[in-house]
Image (cartoon, rainbow, N blue to C red; front, side):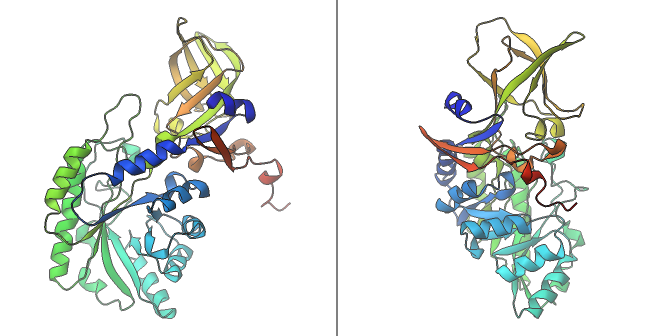
Length: 396
């Protein structure tokens, strides 16, 4: 399929295998969880309308972190009751838009959000359902740049900073959700269980004080296997989760994003130039950090696949760089690969999450097209930017 697509479409482009997405959804739906729950897709991982629609069709909910993502979720056809709004720094428009759409829960991460939500809800004659994202002080022992649950992180609110009695005085909000999310790429199920247990205990305590906590939002963070690293042991995770949820009547929400979409997606690129610099062999591609920034941002080594190269040839070390004017614009250094030639196709795997969604027009590069395929069929789900697109919102 990759060879066929690379012959039909100009590189670079993103493509997604729908069968892998379906398999991930089926895997989660077949977990043996003995309580009331649902999965909601974290749209920030991939906000393409066609991708979002795949999850809606499978009765997966939506988690948004901006008014733009909320608009996309509604445009695809999600019911407001299926949408949760997170975000560490929502602006007034975000909050007011969420209030008017009457979504399932606006999960606050700053106490000051309460007054804005309450005042605007009163102005509109509404009572808004909210949640509080708790910072549990749990170190997920993942990459520091994707850790979100430690003391000192910008996400969530530490319990001792919340005056729950004060919250009761707001007449136009209804606290019905407690939320927690400690990071991404988590392989230790015990870290997740520790964070879950904390908000279960808090919900029990609050309900005894007259609150009506109905939902526990356990976030996401399930690891995607990259370069042979360990994944989450879902058997141990589900067993311990069933134990701590025994005899509890809460509805649990999970927020997988990267886990659902990452390994379905690919960035297909072409070698434009080969050069020597000192003792380095450098391959320069037609893609760059503008199309896949995670390598430069997080210091990760991507999974690479070559097509139409002699895999039996003696390997050579290459630094694989991109086309923007930044010294950090390298995908990987010292990658052992068969001898490359100009025009070779290089595929970056596990790009379904935070590939297109974090792409940019840096260096005024048109954003690539996106293709969804299923078996031998495929369709374009985002057209390539034109040069005119780069100027359409600017005023001279």
